[in-house]
Image (cartoon, rainbow, N blue to C red; front, top):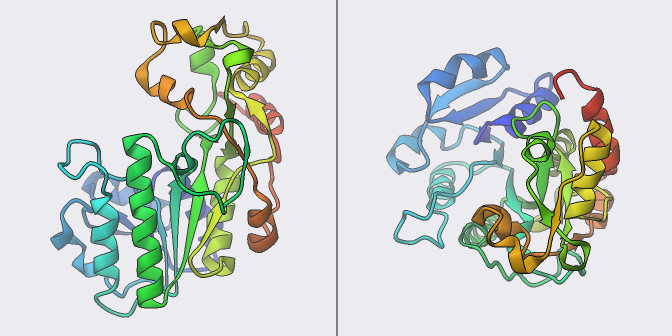
Length: 295
């Protein structure tokens, strides 16, 4: 069962479609037919309304949880009540053999550009990262209490040419500035197809209550990433600005990403999940995207 079957969920489904029966939890009746066309059986349910989830209890032997946490309007803004509702439902009947959750590398907070393994303590700084950390705690507790093999994948920026907003082209066309090199931060990426393959691998190979950094082998600063993309697309490189003036020129969401710098280590993913990256670097992934129609 795929919970939160958007772009990445559909890629997971394509990777599994010939092997297993697939169920997709959806709160949108309008999506039912497109999910059927993709080889999934749609199941109506809304993670914000726990009473609508009862039918999914006991249905799946393996569950991939890709649904984002709720927004900040909730009074308990630091909680992921959607994940809590899902886990309470899954424990009502026979529990799944494996549960895989796609979290975010943002749970590490700012690491001052240091290399980060899964052993590093979590220091989430933003509300969205705090909700992800809350979901991770709930997943680990559920795995231990229900004896379910639970895997947590910490995911950085996802890109792909056939994903909405999946390449830097639009931002380059808008001439959105990036930080000057002295102020710049390290950023991490994973191609959407490689992420889907890691999720599938975790369903069968993930160790109990184990976390995995899921990223490629690149070690680029954010400005280097956009310079690389600009050169591939034949567009001007983005302007560089000092951090002291960035707040006047950049949206708050983008600024939040520019306040955290880390280089994720993916050795555990390769060793334990045995994932061989199709796109080991952003340069390779963007070059493939550039050659794709409509990229």
